[in-house]
Amino acid sequence: MDIGSADACFGGCLCGEIRYEAKGELDFPHLCSCQHCQKISGADAMSWVDFPVEDFHWIGPSGEPKWFDTYPGETKRGFCPECGTSIAAFDYEGTRMGVTIMSLDDPDHVVPIHQGSASNAPTWRPAIKSQIEPDTSSPIIPSPPTATSDRRTNTPPSL
Ligand SMILES: [Zn+2]
Ligand SMILES: [Zn+2]
Image 1 (cartoon, rainbow, N blue to C red):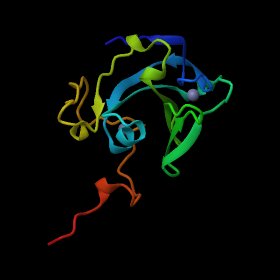
Image 2: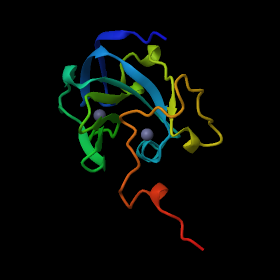
Image 3: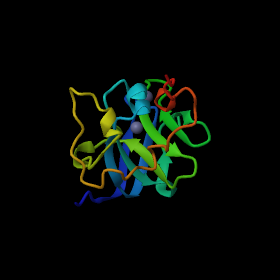
């Protein structure tokens, strides 16, 4: 599959305060239906694509998005403090910046090839068919969390 590479891709939030310029290869366009993506977006899934972080720059009037640690010390999500647009995800140890596909100025050519946490997709919108191995995970899909606030990890009481 050819998803192309980008001499320069631009994108941003709804209000325009947060803008970015990304260069280099687009990597791993995918949907994600993990609980964090669903809660943070209010949607059944979010769509993500990665860019090399070394060529990624925040160029809007407000600079970087506001970051929220979804997995403290591991993963953070970025959103516009003005309009609330979810725009980015970054692993602290990572080499790629994930951005929401729909934040791209020209998103139509970026086609998701996989859906993370597919089993968590709602029944009324089944997961897309994966073009990769089912268990391949994205760097922006965190490994199982240690946070006690994540209900998925809570062990049911034994009877
Ligand atoms: Zn905004
Ligand atoms: Zn997710």
